[in-house]
Length: 427
Figure: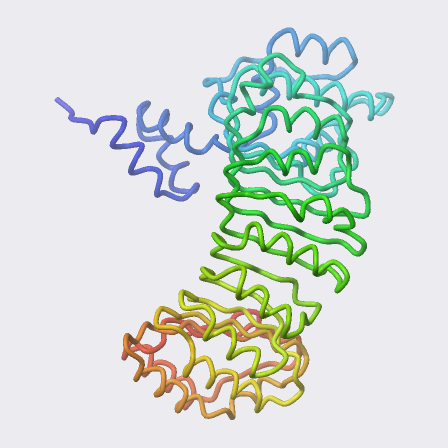
C-alpha cells in the first residue's frame, strides 16, 4: 500500500520550489498536481486558459460581438484556475488581450473588442477570487476606463489587498472607488507623473498599515506632495524615491513628511540626482533615528561621518559619489570602516563616470579589509561598486586572490562590480 504525505506537508514543501520544478510535479500524481497548480496559478500562467475559465454567458457575449474563441479554449478547463490567482497585473491583461485580438478578423473594432474582453475578464475576477496584489502598471494608457470595483464581488475581491502599484494619472473614478475599499495596504508604489488624478491623495491618506511607500518621479511629478506632507502612516518602515528627486523647493515638504513618519522608518532611499546639503542631512538624522538602510548622494566626508555616527542601527548605505578624485572614494571607505556602527555590513558605491575602475583598483584594498577584520564584532562585508564607464574591468590575479583570501577568513561576504562592459563581476 502506497504511503503519501499529507497535502499540507506537500504544500509547505512545494512553496520553496521554483516554477520549473513545480511544473515537473504536475505530472507525478493528482495530489501533487493539485498542490502545484494552486501555487503556480497565484499568478496567471496562460491567457488562453484564462479565457477558457470565462462563464458560458461571457463566452456568448464575446461570440455575439464577433470575437472568436477556438474550440480548445471553449472547453471547460480541468481546474477553476481563477480562484487560485492572488496577483493581478492589469497591464499584463491588456497586453495579452492585444495579442489575442491580432488573431481575430481584421474587420473587428479593436478598441470596442478590448473593452468587452477586459470587462468580462474583470467581472470573472471580481466574482471568484480575492486578490492580495494588484498592479495597475505604469504606461497603462491603452486600458479602457472600466470601473471594475463596481462589479458584483468587487468589494470582497479587493478588501484584503496588501500590495498595490499604479501611476498617478489613471482614471479618477478608479481611485475614488478603490479608496473606499482598500484601507489595509502594506505596500504602495506610485509613479507620479505631471498629472495627479483626483482620489489618489485620498487613497494614500486612508492607509493605516502602510509599511512600504515607493515613489517614482517623472520630471515635473510630485507637484502635489504638499497634500501628503502632513499625512501620518504609523507603521511606515520603507520610503524610497526612484529616478528624479524632489527639487530643492519641495525638500521642506519632504522634511515635514519625515517629521510625521520618520520615527519608524527602517529604509530611506533618496533620489540620486540632487545633493541635499548638510542641513537636510541633519534633519533626516534627527527625524529618522532608527534607519537600517540609507541611499543618498555623497558630497563630503563631514556629511558621511555625521550620518555614520548619527545612525547607531545603520546596517547598509548606498552612495552616489559626486567627487572627481578617486582618492576620496578610498577615504570614504576608510571612514565607513572607522565610524560605521557595530551591525553595519553592506556598502554600495555608485561612482557614475567620475572614476576609472581600472584605476580604482590601485586603492590599497588590503589595508581596508584588514581594518575591517579588526572590528568587534566583525560581520562579513558586502561591497558593491557601480560605474557608468564603458571601459572593461579585468581584475589582476593578485586582486582576485586577495578577495578570495578575505572571503575565506570571513571578512568579505560578497564583492561585486557593475559597469557597462562588465555587467556583473563578483567574488
